[in-house]
Image (cartoon, rainbow, N blue to C red; front, side, top):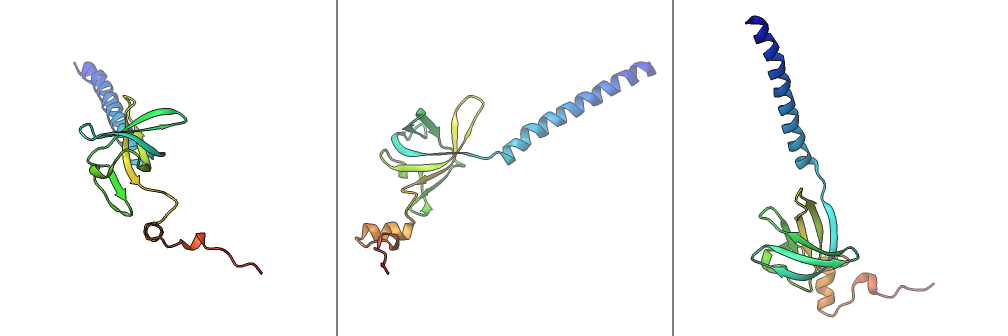
Length: 136
């Protein structure tokens, strides 16, 4: 009986260690995973499904937003209602095992303009980078 107990204990311990290793391996990538960048013009939005599509060189891609997705519009916190077809978008997503692309961040608007410069451009003022340079 003692020999049987000893032979079962190492196997149980090995199984326990393997389960602990599997659990930590599956938990740690979630913490350290980096998002995959994306950008483009939104083709369509499905507000009910919380998805939007972008068509680019690699074809049409559908991105899903969650309650954890950080949405920004014009330098301020945005909402799902800010995500509209025709809007320029960029951000990061995570590709899930089922192939779904879940957004970590959604930044709406032109990347090259800061909020301040964008506002001035909308008001008809030239941005400092657009002013002519003096020639010597």
